[in-house]
Length: 262
Image (cartoon, rainbow, N blue to C red; front, side, top):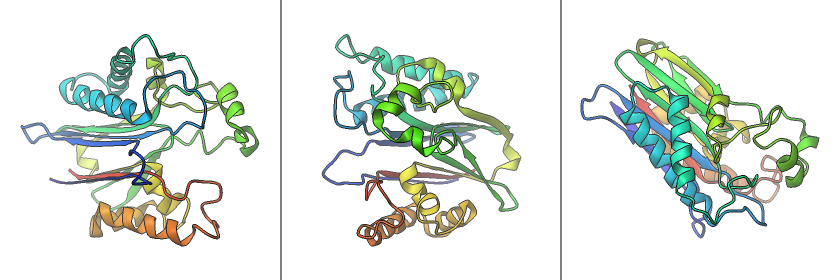
């Protein structure tokens, strides 16, 4: 089995708000990957004493441990329990009902000799390669389908869309959000490899249009996950002045990729 993990901050002066892990049980017959992208809040109160990176480290750690130890529990329930465990660590000084309480996107996959389970919540991505080399993308595209006018201000997003019906969902403090994730189970024989990406790494496709998902997967298979992140950084630097592709997005985003050949 070949696995690769790369996670880089967008700015070396700021903490990386992503989380990435791979866990391979000692039996060698299965494994788990987890990728979280912490949501950077706008300036202003969040109701919480803790940082985004504090949150992603705890949620990601809990999700990894529970996915490995509770192999008979579906990933939706695993995520729900991880959210509860993380919420309990906040303490009384945090208002977990605040719309900007620390939160993250989630991608996790778990494989056994028989099957591959997956869960995707919000705008990170999971790519699945079949034995014939074809690649399919598992996406939660609710955010991208919203009218741009509804995303005009942070206040509008918080009031009408964030973790609300008809909007989009992230993992914060409400365990029921796990039931909103895109999930599925595939036969193990139908999956050759997996690639999980935060949107900072997925920019190669989604912002810079260097190719499609199969092209990105081929790049990682041939040159490695680090090569993908390096290429994204080159594209970001080249577009920093005209901002043809970046628009109002930050020039450099945290970027994480986890690749696993099964």
